[in-house]
Image (cartoon, rainbow, N blue to C red):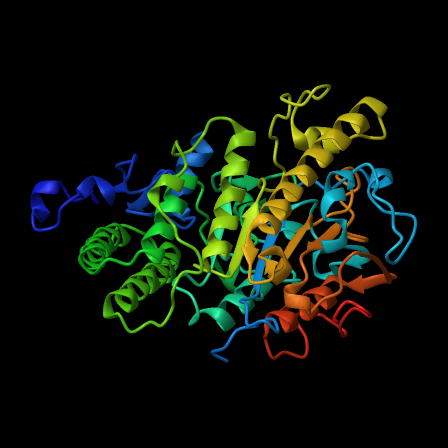
Length: 475
Protein backbone atom coordinates (compact mmCIF):
# COMPACT_ATOMS: atom_id res chain seq x y z
CA UNK A 1 0.00 0.00 0.00
CA UNK A 2 1.25 3.47 -0.86
CA UNK A 3 2.53 5.52 2.04
CA UNK A 4 4.01 9.05 1.68
CA UNK A 5 7.76 8.93 2.18
CA UNK A 6 8.86 10.17 5.57
CA UNK A 7 11.34 13.00 6.09
CA UNK A 8 13.91 10.68 7.61
CA UNK A 9 14.14 8.58 4.48
CA UNK A 10 15.38 11.55 2.43
CA UNK A 11 17.53 13.56 4.76
CA UNK A 12 19.67 14.78 1.88
CA UNK A 13 16.77 16.97 0.65
CA UNK A 14 15.71 19.73 3.07
CA UNK A 15 12.29 21.29 3.55
CA UNK A 16 10.20 18.16 3.23
CA UNK A 17 7.20 20.17 4.41
CA UNK A 18 7.48 22.32 1.30
CA UNK A 19 6.77 19.41 -1.02
CA UNK A 20 4.72 16.50 0.26
CA UNK A 21 2.31 14.08 -1.30
CA UNK A 22 -0.49 14.11 1.20
CA UNK A 23 -2.81 11.13 0.95
CA UNK A 24 -5.71 11.26 3.36
CA UNK A 25 -7.03 7.82 2.42
CA UNK A 26 -4.92 4.73 3.04
CA UNK A 27 -6.72 2.02 1.10
CA UNK A 28 -6.22 0.50 -2.33
CA UNK A 29 -9.70 1.45 -3.45
CA UNK A 30 -10.13 4.97 -2.11
CA UNK A 31 -7.86 7.97 -2.64
CA UNK A 32 -8.82 11.37 -1.35
CA UNK A 33 -9.46 14.05 -3.96
CA UNK A 34 -7.47 16.27 -1.57
CA UNK A 35 -4.31 14.32 -2.32
CA UNK A 36 -1.94 16.94 -3.72
CA UNK A 37 1.67 17.56 -4.62
CA UNK A 38 3.01 20.65 -2.87
CA UNK A 39 6.23 22.50 -3.59
CA UNK A 40 7.73 25.91 -3.08
CA UNK A 41 5.71 28.15 -5.34
CA UNK A 42 3.46 25.41 -6.72
CA UNK A 43 0.66 23.12 -5.67
CA UNK A 44 -0.25 20.43 -8.13
CA UNK A 45 -3.46 18.50 -7.58
CA UNK A 46 -3.60 14.90 -8.69
CA UNK A 47 -5.64 14.25 -11.82
CA UNK A 48 -9.08 12.76 -11.33
CA UNK A 49 -8.70 9.03 -10.72
CA UNK A 50 -11.17 6.18 -10.66
CA UNK A 51 -9.71 5.33 -7.25
CA UNK A 52 -11.31 8.53 -5.94
CA UNK A 53 -14.79 7.36 -6.92
CA UNK A 54 -15.29 5.15 -3.88
CA UNK A 55 -14.66 8.04 -1.54
CA UNK A 56 -16.89 10.39 -3.54
CA UNK A 57 -19.74 7.91 -3.70
CA UNK A 58 -19.38 7.41 -0.01
CA UNK A 59 -19.57 11.08 0.46
CA UNK A 60 6.98 28.97 -34.34
CA UNK A 61 9.18 29.92 -31.58
CA UNK A 62 8.27 33.58 -31.72
CA UNK A 63 5.33 35.31 -30.13
CA UNK A 64 3.08 38.17 -31.09
CA UNK A 65 4.47 41.64 -30.44
CA UNK A 66 2.98 45.04 -31.02
CA UNK A 67 4.68 47.60 -33.21
CA UNK A 68 6.47 48.83 -30.10
CA UNK A 69 7.91 45.33 -29.61
CA UNK A 70 5.85 44.71 -26.50
CA UNK A 71 4.69 41.18 -25.65
CA UNK A 72 1.06 40.27 -26.33
CA UNK A 73 -0.84 38.59 -23.50
CA UNK A 74 -3.96 36.44 -23.62
CA UNK A 75 -6.25 35.50 -20.74
CA UNK A 76 -9.62 33.74 -20.62
CA UNK A 77 -11.99 34.29 -17.69
CA UNK A 78 -14.87 31.83 -17.39
CA UNK A 79 -18.13 32.49 -15.52
CA UNK A 80 -20.54 29.61 -14.82
CA UNK A 81 -24.33 29.64 -15.18
CA UNK A 82 -24.84 32.24 -17.90
CA UNK A 83 -26.35 35.75 -17.62
CA UNK A 84 -29.67 37.54 -17.39
CA UNK A 85 -30.35 38.11 -21.08
CA UNK A 86 -32.41 41.30 -21.01
CA UNK A 87 -29.70 43.15 -19.06
CA UNK A 88 -26.74 42.10 -21.19
CA UNK A 89 -26.87 42.97 -24.91
CA UNK A 90 -26.50 46.58 -26.11
CA UNK A 91 -29.17 47.77 -28.54
CA UNK A 92 -26.82 49.78 -30.78
CA UNK A 93 -23.97 48.32 -32.80
CA UNK A 94 -20.50 49.68 -33.48
CA UNK A 95 -18.81 52.41 -31.45
CA UNK A 96 -22.09 54.02 -30.33
CA UNK A 97 -23.20 51.11 -28.18
CA UNK A 98 -24.46 51.89 -24.71
CA UNK A 99 -23.41 50.24 -21.47
CA UNK A 100 -26.26 47.97 -20.39
CA UNK A 101 -27.01 47.30 -16.69
CA UNK A 102 -24.70 44.26 -16.72
CA UNK A 103 -21.89 45.99 -18.61
CA UNK A 104 -22.00 49.33 -16.78
CA UNK A 105 -19.10 48.47 -14.41
CA UNK A 106 -16.88 48.51 -17.53
CA UNK A 107 -17.66 52.13 -18.39
CA UNK A 108 -14.14 53.36 -17.55
CA UNK A 109 -12.57 50.97 -20.06
CA UNK A 110 -15.28 51.14 -22.75
CA UNK A 111 -12.76 52.28 -25.36
CA UNK A 112 -10.74 49.11 -24.71
CA UNK A 113 -13.78 46.81 -24.75
CA UNK A 114 -15.22 44.63 -27.52
CA UNK A 115 -18.74 43.23 -27.07
CA UNK A 116 -19.91 40.31 -29.21
CA UNK A 117 -23.44 39.23 -30.05
CA UNK A 118 -24.66 36.08 -31.85
CA UNK A 119 -21.59 33.92 -31.29
CA UNK A 120 -22.35 30.32 -30.44
CA UNK A 121 -20.51 27.09 -29.71
CA UNK A 122 -22.04 24.41 -31.90
CA UNK A 123 -19.93 21.67 -30.35
CA UNK A 124 -21.62 22.23 -27.00
CA UNK A 125 -25.16 22.03 -28.36
CA UNK A 126 -25.52 18.44 -27.19
CA UNK A 127 -25.81 16.31 -24.11
CA UNK A 128 -26.37 18.25 -20.96
CA UNK A 129 -26.96 21.60 -19.36
CA UNK A 130 -23.46 22.56 -18.21
CA UNK A 131 -20.55 20.11 -18.50
CA UNK A 132 -20.30 20.04 -22.31
CA UNK A 133 -20.50 23.82 -22.34
CA UNK A 134 -17.74 24.22 -19.75
CA UNK A 135 -15.03 21.82 -20.94
CA UNK A 136 -15.79 22.83 -24.53
CA UNK A 137 -15.72 26.58 -23.87
CA UNK A 138 -12.15 27.09 -25.13
CA UNK A 139 -11.91 24.02 -27.38
CA UNK A 140 -15.12 24.51 -29.41
CA UNK A 141 -15.43 20.73 -29.57
CA UNK A 142 -17.86 18.14 -28.25
CA UNK A 143 -16.59 16.24 -25.22
CA UNK A 144 -17.12 12.51 -24.88
CA UNK A 145 -20.00 11.52 -22.65
CA UNK A 146 -18.19 9.88 -19.77
CA UNK A 147 -18.66 8.72 -16.20
CA UNK A 148 -14.98 9.42 -15.59
CA UNK A 149 -13.05 6.60 -17.25
CA UNK A 150 -12.48 8.06 -20.70
CA UNK A 151 -12.28 11.84 -20.33
CA UNK A 152 -11.85 13.35 -23.78
CA UNK A 153 -12.61 16.86 -25.01
CA UNK A 154 -11.54 15.94 -28.58
CA UNK A 155 -9.37 19.01 -28.98
CA UNK A 156 -6.88 21.48 -27.56
CA UNK A 157 -8.06 24.69 -25.93
CA UNK A 158 -7.26 27.97 -27.63
CA UNK A 159 -5.24 29.20 -24.65
CA UNK A 160 -2.94 26.20 -25.00
CA UNK A 161 -2.50 26.83 -28.72
CA UNK A 162 -1.25 30.28 -27.68
CA UNK A 163 0.85 28.83 -24.85
CA UNK A 164 2.57 26.38 -27.21
CA UNK A 165 3.36 29.26 -29.53
CA UNK A 166 4.84 31.43 -26.74
CA UNK A 167 6.40 28.78 -24.52
CA UNK A 168 10.02 29.61 -25.33
CA UNK A 169 9.57 33.28 -24.58
CA UNK A 170 8.73 33.17 -20.88
CA UNK A 171 9.70 31.02 -17.87
CA UNK A 172 6.11 29.79 -17.46
CA UNK A 173 4.17 28.81 -20.58
CA UNK A 174 0.77 29.37 -18.97
CA UNK A 175 -0.96 29.49 -15.62
CA UNK A 176 -4.36 27.99 -14.87
CA UNK A 177 -6.25 29.45 -11.92
CA UNK A 178 -9.51 28.74 -10.14
CA UNK A 179 -11.46 29.13 -6.92
CA UNK A 180 -13.29 25.82 -6.47
CA UNK A 181 -11.55 22.43 -6.08
CA UNK A 182 -12.09 19.84 -8.78
CA UNK A 183 -15.59 18.41 -8.46
CA UNK A 184 -15.71 14.63 -8.68
CA UNK A 185 -18.37 11.96 -8.97
CA UNK A 186 -21.12 11.61 -11.54
CA UNK A 187 -24.02 13.98 -12.12
CA UNK A 188 -26.74 11.37 -12.44
CA UNK A 189 -29.16 13.90 -13.90
CA UNK A 190 -27.18 14.01 -17.15
CA UNK A 191 -24.75 11.07 -16.96
CA UNK A 192 -21.51 13.07 -17.07
CA UNK A 193 -18.60 13.08 -14.66
CA UNK A 194 -18.47 16.37 -12.76
CA UNK A 195 -14.75 16.56 -13.48
CA UNK A 196 -15.62 18.04 -16.86
CA UNK A 197 -17.13 21.02 -15.08
CA UNK A 198 -13.83 21.90 -13.43
CA UNK A 199 -11.70 22.46 -16.54
CA UNK A 200 -11.58 24.87 -19.45
CA UNK A 201 -7.86 24.51 -20.28
CA UNK A 202 -6.84 21.35 -22.17
CA UNK A 203 -3.29 20.59 -23.31
CA UNK A 204 -4.74 17.84 -25.49
CA UNK A 205 -7.90 15.77 -25.88
CA UNK A 206 -7.34 13.75 -22.71
CA UNK A 207 -5.25 16.23 -20.72
CA UNK A 208 -7.17 18.80 -18.67
CA UNK A 209 -4.75 21.12 -16.90
CA UNK A 210 -4.75 21.31 -13.11
CA UNK A 211 -5.63 24.72 -11.71
CA UNK A 212 -3.92 26.50 -8.85
CA UNK A 213 -6.38 27.64 -6.20
CA UNK A 214 -4.01 29.26 -3.71
CA UNK A 215 -2.98 32.85 -4.58
CA UNK A 216 0.02 32.75 -2.25
CA UNK A 217 1.43 29.73 -4.07
CA UNK A 218 0.76 31.39 -7.42
CA UNK A 219 2.76 34.38 -6.26
CA UNK A 220 5.64 32.25 -5.03
CA UNK A 221 5.76 30.49 -8.38
CA UNK A 222 5.89 33.82 -10.19
CA UNK A 223 8.49 35.12 -7.77
CA UNK A 224 10.77 32.15 -8.31
CA UNK A 225 10.47 32.49 -12.07
CA UNK A 226 11.22 36.22 -11.95
CA UNK A 227 14.06 35.83 -9.46
CA UNK A 228 15.92 32.71 -10.55
CA UNK A 229 18.36 31.35 -7.97
CA UNK A 230 20.76 28.62 -9.00
CA UNK A 231 20.93 26.86 -5.61
CA UNK A 232 17.18 27.02 -5.14
CA UNK A 233 16.53 25.62 -8.61
CA UNK A 234 18.88 22.72 -7.95
CA UNK A 235 17.04 22.01 -4.72
CA UNK A 236 13.65 22.18 -6.43
CA UNK A 237 14.76 19.75 -9.11
CA UNK A 238 15.67 17.25 -6.41
CA UNK A 239 12.36 17.85 -4.71
CA UNK A 240 10.43 17.21 -7.89
CA UNK A 241 12.36 13.98 -8.45
CA UNK A 242 11.42 12.91 -4.97
CA UNK A 243 7.74 13.60 -5.56
CA UNK A 244 7.83 11.66 -8.81
CA UNK A 245 9.14 8.66 -6.90
CA UNK A 246 6.30 8.99 -4.41
CA UNK A 247 3.72 9.20 -7.19
CA UNK A 248 5.17 6.20 -9.00
CA UNK A 249 4.76 4.26 -5.77
CA UNK A 250 1.15 5.37 -5.64
CA UNK A 251 0.71 4.46 -9.31
CA UNK A 252 1.62 0.86 -8.55
CA UNK A 253 -1.59 0.62 -6.53
CA UNK A 254 -3.83 1.90 -9.34
CA UNK A 255 -5.79 0.27 -12.13
CA UNK A 256 -4.91 0.54 -15.81
CA UNK A 257 -7.01 3.65 -16.55
CA UNK A 258 -5.67 5.46 -13.49
CA UNK A 259 -2.09 4.53 -14.39
CA UNK A 260 -2.58 6.09 -17.82
CA UNK A 261 -3.85 9.28 -16.21
CA UNK A 262 -0.92 9.26 -13.81
CA UNK A 263 1.54 8.83 -16.70
CA UNK A 264 0.08 11.91 -18.38
CA UNK A 265 0.26 13.79 -15.10
CA UNK A 266 3.88 12.80 -14.51
CA UNK A 267 4.74 14.18 -17.93
CA UNK A 268 3.18 17.47 -16.85
CA UNK A 269 5.21 17.49 -13.62
CA UNK A 270 8.37 16.69 -15.56
CA UNK A 271 7.73 19.66 -17.84
CA UNK A 272 7.94 21.87 -14.74
CA UNK A 273 11.25 20.29 -13.86
CA UNK A 274 12.55 21.04 -17.34
CA UNK A 275 11.60 24.68 -16.94
CA UNK A 276 13.50 24.78 -13.67
CA UNK A 277 16.51 23.24 -15.39
CA UNK A 278 16.28 25.88 -18.12
CA UNK A 279 16.44 28.59 -15.46
CA UNK A 280 19.34 26.85 -13.77
CA UNK A 281 21.35 26.70 -17.00
CA UNK A 282 21.40 30.49 -17.17
CA UNK A 283 21.06 30.38 -20.97
CA UNK A 284 17.59 31.86 -21.17
CA UNK A 285 17.64 35.46 -22.45
CA UNK A 286 14.37 36.23 -20.68
CA UNK A 287 14.31 39.10 -18.19
CA UNK A 288 11.28 40.25 -16.16
CA UNK A 289 9.70 43.45 -17.45
CA UNK A 290 8.98 44.62 -13.90
CA UNK A 291 10.56 43.90 -10.53
CA UNK A 292 8.81 41.35 -8.35
CA UNK A 293 9.54 41.28 -4.63
CA UNK A 294 8.18 39.28 -1.71
CA UNK A 295 6.72 42.53 -0.35
CA UNK A 296 4.02 42.13 -3.00
CA UNK A 297 3.00 38.68 -1.79
CA UNK A 298 -0.61 38.10 -0.64
CA UNK A 299 -0.93 38.33 3.12
CA UNK A 300 -2.72 34.99 3.40
CA UNK A 301 -2.63 31.64 1.64
CA UNK A 302 -6.21 30.97 0.57
CA UNK A 303 -8.80 33.40 1.95
CA UNK A 304 -12.11 32.11 3.23
CA UNK A 305 -13.67 35.31 1.91
CA UNK A 306 -14.77 34.62 -1.67
CA UNK A 307 -14.57 38.22 -3.02
CA UNK A 308 -11.09 38.62 -1.58
CA UNK A 309 -10.03 35.27 -3.02
CA UNK A 310 -11.20 36.33 -6.48
CA UNK A 311 -9.44 39.70 -6.27
CA UNK A 312 -6.17 38.06 -5.23
CA UNK A 313 -6.33 35.70 -8.19
CA UNK A 314 -6.95 38.61 -10.55
CA UNK A 315 -4.01 40.41 -8.96
CA UNK A 316 -1.86 37.38 -9.76
CA UNK A 317 -2.90 37.53 -13.42
CA UNK A 318 -2.01 41.21 -13.56
CA UNK A 319 1.34 40.61 -11.87
CA UNK A 320 2.18 37.72 -14.18
CA UNK A 321 1.41 39.84 -17.24
CA UNK A 322 3.18 42.93 -15.94
CA UNK A 323 6.40 41.01 -15.29
CA UNK A 324 6.04 38.95 -18.50
CA UNK A 325 6.49 35.79 -16.44
CA UNK A 326 3.78 34.23 -18.59
CA UNK A 327 1.67 35.51 -21.46
CA UNK A 328 -1.22 33.07 -21.20
CA UNK A 329 -3.67 32.51 -18.35
CA UNK A 330 -7.10 31.03 -17.66
CA UNK A 331 -9.28 31.69 -14.63
CA UNK A 332 -12.54 30.06 -13.57
CA UNK A 333 -14.76 32.12 -11.26
CA UNK A 334 -16.47 28.83 -10.44
CA UNK A 335 -17.01 25.29 -11.67
CA UNK A 336 -19.96 24.27 -13.78
CA UNK A 337 -23.21 24.04 -11.81
CA UNK A 338 -21.58 26.27 -9.20
CA UNK A 339 -23.78 26.63 -6.14
CA UNK A 340 -21.65 29.45 -4.74
CA UNK A 341 -23.61 31.49 -2.21
CA UNK A 342 -23.70 35.19 -3.12
CA UNK A 343 -25.50 36.37 0.00
CA UNK A 344 -22.68 38.90 0.51
CA UNK A 345 -24.53 40.89 -2.16
CA UNK A 346 -27.52 42.82 -0.88
CA UNK A 347 -30.78 41.25 -1.98
CA UNK A 348 -29.22 37.92 -2.95
CA UNK A 349 -29.75 34.63 -1.15
CA UNK A 350 -29.22 31.03 -2.15
CA UNK A 351 -26.78 29.46 -4.57
CA UNK A 352 -25.71 30.76 -7.96
CA UNK A 353 -26.88 27.72 -9.92
CA UNK A 354 -30.31 27.68 -8.28
CA UNK A 355 -30.69 31.41 -8.91
CA UNK A 356 -29.80 30.98 -12.58
CA UNK A 357 -32.77 28.58 -12.89
CA UNK A 358 -35.01 31.58 -12.43
CA UNK A 359 -38.09 30.31 -14.33
CA UNK A 360 -38.77 34.01 -15.00
CA UNK A 361 -39.45 34.64 -11.33
CA UNK A 362 -38.75 38.36 -10.85
CA UNK A 363 -37.02 37.96 -7.48
CA UNK A 364 -34.65 35.36 -8.88
CA UNK A 365 -34.06 37.42 -12.01
CA UNK A 366 -33.12 40.42 -9.89
CA UNK A 367 -30.70 38.32 -7.83
CA UNK A 368 -29.30 36.75 -11.00
CA UNK A 369 -28.59 40.18 -12.41
CA UNK A 370 -26.77 41.28 -9.25
CA UNK A 371 -24.52 38.21 -9.48
CA UNK A 372 -23.87 38.89 -13.17
CA UNK A 373 -23.01 42.50 -12.47
CA UNK A 374 -20.66 41.51 -9.63
CA UNK A 375 -18.74 39.17 -11.96
CA UNK A 376 -18.45 41.90 -14.59
CA UNK A 377 -17.20 44.31 -11.91
CA UNK A 378 -14.37 41.89 -11.11
CA UNK A 379 -13.51 41.73 -14.80
CA UNK A 380 -13.50 45.53 -14.86
CA UNK A 381 -11.16 45.50 -11.87
CA UNK A 382 -8.64 43.40 -13.79
CA UNK A 383 -8.86 45.52 -16.94
CA UNK A 384 -8.42 48.75 -14.98
CA UNK A 385 -5.49 47.27 -13.08
CA UNK A 386 -3.77 46.26 -16.32
CA UNK A 387 -4.50 49.69 -17.74
CA UNK A 388 -2.79 51.30 -14.73
CA UNK A 389 0.43 49.35 -15.43
CA UNK A 390 2.51 51.53 -17.73
CA UNK A 391 4.43 49.87 -20.53
CA UNK A 392 6.36 52.04 -22.94
CA UNK A 393 4.04 54.76 -24.18
CA UNK A 394 1.00 52.66 -23.36
CA UNK A 395 0.03 50.12 -20.74
CA UNK A 396 -0.26 46.37 -20.25
CA UNK A 397 -3.96 46.33 -21.23
CA UNK A 398 -3.05 47.91 -24.57
CA UNK A 399 -0.97 44.82 -25.27
CA UNK A 400 -3.42 42.22 -23.96
CA UNK A 401 -6.56 40.32 -24.92
CA UNK A 402 -8.69 39.44 -21.89
CA UNK A 403 -11.61 37.19 -22.82
CA UNK A 404 -14.65 37.02 -20.54
CA UNK A 405 -17.62 34.76 -21.03
CA UNK A 406 -19.80 31.82 -20.17
CA UNK A 407 -20.48 28.58 -22.00
CA UNK A 408 -24.22 29.20 -22.03
CA UNK A 409 -26.44 32.22 -22.58
CA UNK A 410 -29.11 31.78 -19.94
CA UNK A 411 -28.92 29.48 -16.95
CA UNK A 412 -32.59 28.67 -17.12
CA UNK A 413 -32.58 27.44 -20.73
CA UNK A 414 -28.93 26.22 -20.95
CA UNK A 415 -28.78 27.88 -24.36
CA UNK A 416 -25.35 27.82 -26.11
CA UNK A 417 -26.54 30.33 -28.74
CA UNK A 418 -25.69 34.05 -28.54
CA UNK A 419 -23.13 33.57 -25.80
CA UNK A 420 -22.20 36.49 -23.49
CA UNK A 421 -18.68 37.22 -24.73
CA UNK A 422 -16.39 40.19 -24.10
CA UNK A 423 -12.76 40.95 -24.96
CA UNK A 424 -10.77 43.69 -23.24
CA UNK A 425 -7.52 45.11 -24.62
CA UNK A 426 -6.19 45.85 -28.08
CA UNK A 427 -3.41 43.25 -28.51
CA UNK A 428 -0.87 45.93 -29.31
CA UNK A 429 -3.24 47.52 -31.84
CA UNK A 430 -3.91 44.25 -33.67
CA UNK A 431 -7.62 44.13 -32.81
CA UNK A 432 -10.37 46.76 -32.87
CA UNK A 433 -11.80 47.89 -29.54
CA UNK A 434 -14.60 50.14 -28.31
CA UNK A 435 -17.27 48.46 -30.45
CA UNK A 436 -20.27 46.19 -30.25
CA UNK A 437 -19.82 43.52 -32.91
CA UNK A 438 -23.19 42.04 -33.87
CA UNK A 439 -22.68 38.94 -36.00
CA UNK A 440 -25.03 36.94 -38.15
CA UNK A 441 -27.01 34.37 -36.20
CA UNK A 442 -25.01 31.28 -35.21
CA UNK A 443 -21.58 32.64 -36.05
CA UNK A 444 -19.00 30.19 -34.61
CA UNK A 445 -17.33 31.27 -31.39
CA UNK A 446 -14.22 29.72 -32.95
CA UNK A 447 -14.16 32.59 -35.46
CA UNK A 448 -13.38 34.95 -32.58
CA UNK A 449 -10.73 32.58 -31.24
CA UNK A 450 -9.12 32.35 -34.68
CA UNK A 451 -8.76 36.13 -34.80
CA UNK A 452 -7.41 36.29 -31.26
CA UNK A 453 -4.82 33.60 -31.94
CA UNK A 454 -3.74 35.36 -35.13
CA UNK A 455 -3.39 38.61 -33.19
CA UNK A 456 -1.31 36.72 -30.63
CA UNK A 457 1.07 35.76 -33.42
CA UNK A 458 -0.02 32.19 -34.17
CA UNK A 459 0.22 31.35 -37.85
CA UNK A 460 -3.14 29.61 -38.23
CA UNK A 461 -5.93 29.80 -40.77
CA UNK A 462 -8.61 28.49 -38.45
CA UNK A 463 -9.43 26.95 -35.10
CA UNK A 464 -11.85 24.08 -34.38
CA UNK A 465 -15.08 24.70 -36.36
CA UNK A 466 -14.25 28.24 -37.44
CA UNK A 467 -15.38 29.44 -40.84
CA UNK A 468 -13.11 32.49 -40.91
CA UNK A 469 -12.58 35.53 -38.70
CA UNK A 470 -15.01 38.18 -37.50
CA UNK A 471 -15.42 41.13 -39.89
CA UNK A 472 -13.81 44.27 -38.55
CA UNK A 473 -12.31 42.64 -35.45
CA UNK A 474 -8.72 42.46 -36.70
CA UNK A 475 -7.15 45.90 -37.19
